[in-house]
Length: 315
Image (cartoon, rainbow, N blue to C red; front, side, top):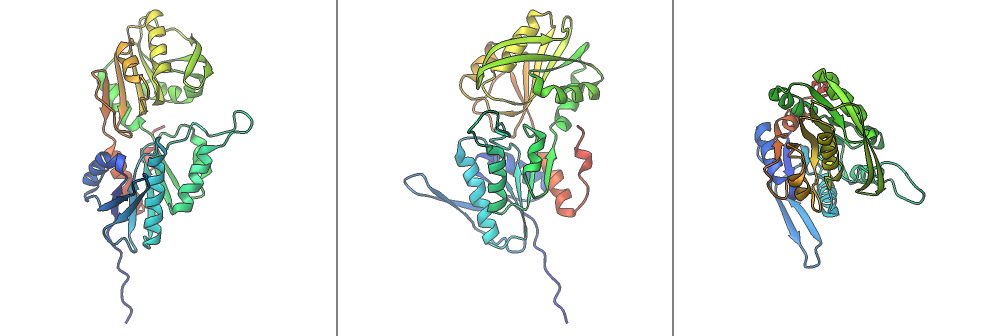
């Protein structure tokens, strides 16, 4: 008589910096976070250890990989640990996929870091990737494993509609984000404008011009991430000078490095709406955080049950 094959329940684990989000995702999923113990050496080296069996199980490891590089290293080590512990499926749930701005060779003798990170994740043991609002859509092609690329528009669009703004206009802070801005404008049936900027070097803008009319408009800037906040705040100030009634911004990933918080507080931005893909370093009266836990939990449930997730791709 053949013994039926026992399939364990899916297990969810969290990388250190994404523990708060992971706890919310696990609760929405109807589960609890698995126990991971971290051993640390005096020189900073660390070793994760699953304190429960994952043999034959579907494992979800939740962690954003924004710098420092320790966040990426933590994800890689946990993937490797799950692989060596004989997990059946290992899904890296990365609300923010770090190092994505290096997605091509834009000058000689530089790496394509996004491609390297993709290969490292697969080598470490990831059999599937779930992420949200990649900096460049083509990064999906850097993987040989399935990638579920979710859009934060499923969170932002209901919020924007709830504001009931008259004379709404969507704006892209640069030419590269024009496709995203047009998609939002189509969904909201409104106009779109674009900022043209020139950079002196990384994170330093030398010149910005506005393409389109914002006079008498309530403007919403759309971007995938905010780092130093230089682009968004400069764009907001420019639009207010050109006669805009108000300027808000929606950005999926709130990196907010350097003096970003101070720039936002002093800028003409009425509100910055972000997701919780990266935990905020501190609170701000101008920053509103939308919860992404339900979105990730729903997709993880569908992946586990082998059902379609196409409804999550609004854009």
